[in-house]
Amino acid sequence: DAGVIQSPRHEVTEMGQEVTLRCKPISGHNSLFWYRQTMMRGLELLIYFNNNVPIDDSGMPEDRFSAKMPNASFSTLKIQPSEPRDSAVYFCASRPGAANTEAFFGQGTRLTVV
Amino acid sequence: GEDVEQSLFLSVREGDSSVINCTYTDSSSTYLYWYKQEPGAGLQLLTYIFSNMDMKQDQRLTVLLNKKDKHLSLRIADTQTGDSAIYFCAERGGGATNKLIFGTGTLLAVQP
Image (cartoon, rainbow over all chains, first blue to last red; front, side):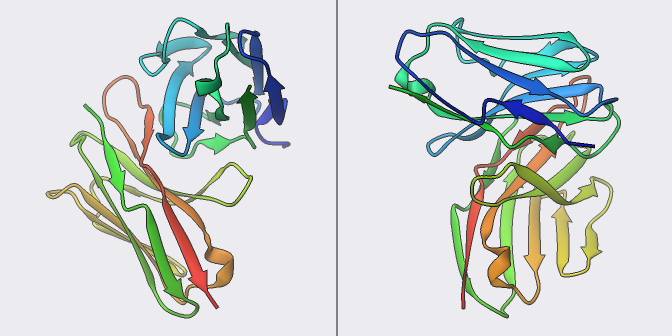
């Protein structure tokens, strides 16, 4: 299995532009998480899906952020419009099911908004 | 609410033991985890402990859990330079969400 796949690995964009981050979870995994990592805030949970349904989006910073999971094999995190303070590494993770213990992380997308 | 805290930095010499500490607030946590992040990489699960256990040993790793004080520690015996990384403590909350909440991470620097 290729693991959790995120794309792109790096993204540099201008302030005000729309950014879409993509994630392909491990096949068969029912839970998917989006995290943001910064030096100041550490690793923050943004949103959590179970069986493609958003369960908890309380970590989404503001309305500029949205996440979708149209099917079990794909999720997107969109920022529109982007701002310099959104610069961070965004991680996607998946877990086999709610009862399982381990979440598997992707390599992350490093987003830089200039 | 949920909050997980760790010290930011730990420096040890190669061959010594490292102890990384973590405190959490959610008393309904079911599992507690230690993840390792190497530079430029994602997080990798090292070990975990179920909340009704107080100790777990896995080769060079020993996890201690004090549920009363909500304190978790990771001991790495015979620390090697390859152990240099950021170590994250995480709790899995109880209830319906089962979400993972991570600590701030502890940067472990191993001096040769």
